Image 1 (cartoon, rainbow, N blue to C red):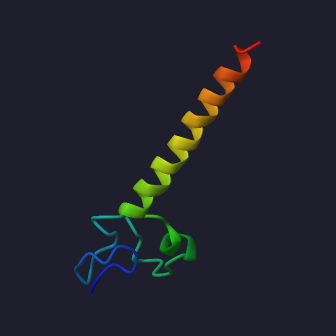
Image 2: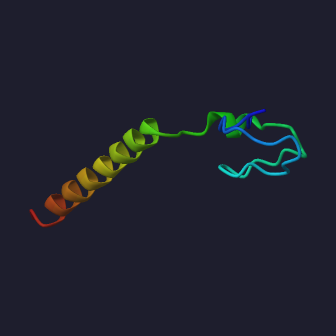
Length: 67
């Protein structure tokens, strides 16, 4: 058997996943858990928003001190 959230193999009597902490007793994988960003996509989104934030700070800095 494998965890429905992260796909890590598990034992039959495990209560929680050792990798992601999914509760096997509820045995209802929430749609939000399946839609979470992971791996390279998470890094791409993080770097994108960091670049947007840095660009906004530079734009703000140049706008405020170019009076």
